[in-house]
Length: 411
Image (cartoon, rainbow, N blue to C red; front, side, top):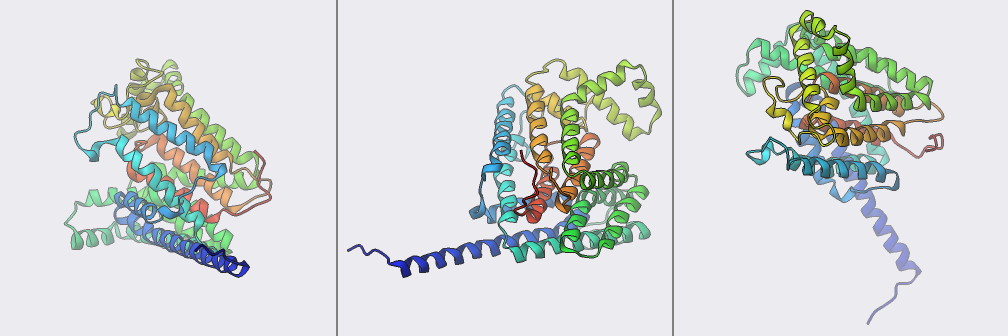
């Protein structure tokens, strides 16, 4: 016999459904708060653990995985990009010897897991969103203080911990690792400041964050983080002062960078000053300029389809691992098709920050996005796991601060 539930049964079923939803919100909130609690420690002691952290959050939060209506354009672009990258392995000269070297496989796993982690931040219950933002703000300030201690003690704390829990480490490598840690904080602190503004927490928290980037970066020769602080401040102020035009200008600049990177290198060489500048600057920057020049030359061979995913690894000694420029690497490996997809993703991700009135979230995300573009242009390979995981962390922080907002610009 089948019994139809009366009105009371419908209310009870609704309450049960609400309880289950609340449990999911609490679960997601604790996952995300825990991730942001661990992020400073991983950024300091082991950045390579960041992708494991984000993937674990995504795996545990799979019940929250959703693609909302406003997500569909960028979700489609990401999926098409993944498919194009996978197809390009057919003609790539690089052949992975094991799963750990298979970039296409890793990207196929990262896309759903990182998306799930972002959905977890959106789905978290409001009290736990607030807790996670507090963890982000105060944790980033503590991260800055720790890096200031490393600056004042010449990485003594890092060496003690590394020796006690792993093995002795050369002093120059310890200095390099702390310099590397400043990249993580440089990406985090604009978001952390935005979180503090949203929570109405003390704004002086930004002081140890910014100082924690600048002081160690100067001492341990991390040039890009030094440049990132004034860049983030300028972009954040612009997005606050011009809440509609600022983010769109940044999105436009990202599109120009993605599409015109080879042209910029060509123009530099055509001026006749590229070689002289390459010979005059310090070795690390000279090597980058050499990689960029070689990337341009090899891109000309297959400008539309590229050489294939991870082909950069096969162009030594002209290029070691990757060109140290995200746009040039995409042009070299995935060609014009990949560059167009990259430009479209950046435009959608950043232009939607436009608002009619200033918002901490939009200013903070725009500032962190500008830092991500800077570091991608001069430092890291576009497919590096920890680098992509940090992009996911930026999106997670944005998801924590997002809310229904009538001031959002129309699209």
